[in-house]
Length: 114
Length: 111
Image 1 (cartoon, each protein chain N blue to C red):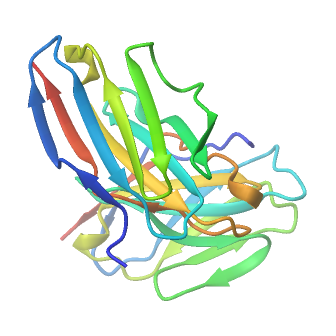
Image 2: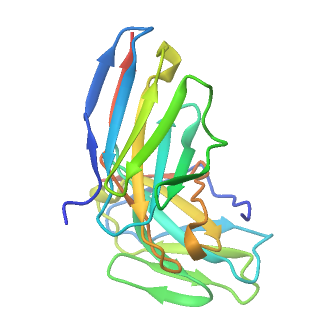
């Protein structure tokens, strides 16, 4: 398996534009997590899904952020409109429904909003 | 999820053994202790997990005392490539409880 795949790896956009980050989890993994990492705030959990259903979105910072998982092999994190303070590295991770099994992270998307 | 406390940073030299301690006074009976490693510009990677006593794998050892209120990640003979952030997580991971990362410990290995 190729692991968790995120795209794009880098994104530069102008303030006010819509940004869509994409994630393909490992096949067979029932859980998918979206994280945001900055120097100031560390690694923050934004939202996670189980079997394509959002379970906890309490970490989503504002209504400008939304996440979807239309099927077991694809998820998106959308920011609309984007702001400079959204600049961060966004990670996607997945894990199977097995007791105490590790989560696997993607390489991340580095987002820069100018 | 139990709150964890780790040192913010540690420095070491190549070839030394490094021990990173994590405090988790409120650990629950069913909680496991898990450590992740994150290299610059990469996502975190699972290192090791344990419940009690000692666990060892090809990367590290995890020591957990009987009261389980702390744990120590031990990295034998570190190299420059072990420079990373190390996160301690405590929780019951059954059925995918959310993974919440603290600030972690920045380990700098010098030559």
